[in-house]
Image 1 (spheres, rainbow, N blue to C red):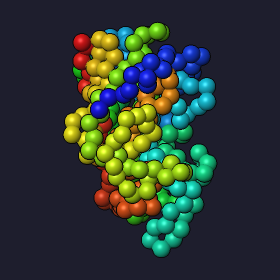
Image 2: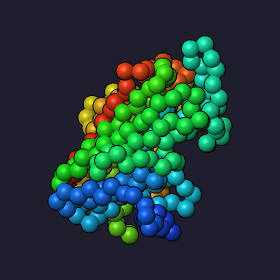
Image 3: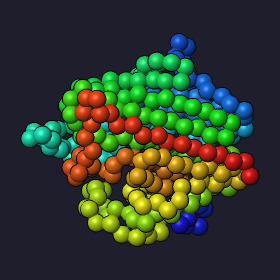
Image 4: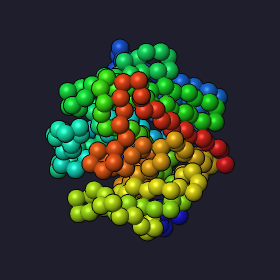
Length: 285
């Protein structure tokens, strides 16, 4: 399944989106191999702020409207939306802040500084916005032909959990360049209700544009720009694709679907963490 022709024709280079600057004293992870350079921004929510392949940037590196709209950021301890920010666990009902009213959105670690633990590793504690204690860590490995990121959520007490990543890929790698195409071969898509939350019904994926969750992938998603192909893979079984913006496309691996906390959530506990990986493999064509 590919993006529609109309979708591709709407693509354009971001205009007015200045890269988020590295300020004096800011700690970054600057990882390089061959012609690839990956810059991780711990102080900006532990996100990957830049991925440059032979001098061509594939990520949106800044956005005037803030943290949700650039780079490739971690989502934890939930991914996607939680309906009205409310869920029940172990007999208690919890209310989360509504980052995207009327829903809670993408966890509590993307907008806070992370610690640098090693030249390739960072971590952060869960804060008061989540009712359970724990921490999240990421480790990065860059090769000439790819990137692998590992995320682990450790719990100090039992809690529902979903983790994932939210990359914002550029539609075009050069101003006026031909836009990206997406190959996505998924068996099922979750039907959303009027509030944008999955109903539980699954259907064969229709043509896009999408802001939807898919599962049952028969092959890895592939993004292709002129001269560059990027294959995405993950231990996560759920993928959200958001290809409605003219300037970007998001292909997001997640360990659970949106609103998982109100469905059948995975549970992490002391001594039983959740760990997933996201891998990118690129080839110059």
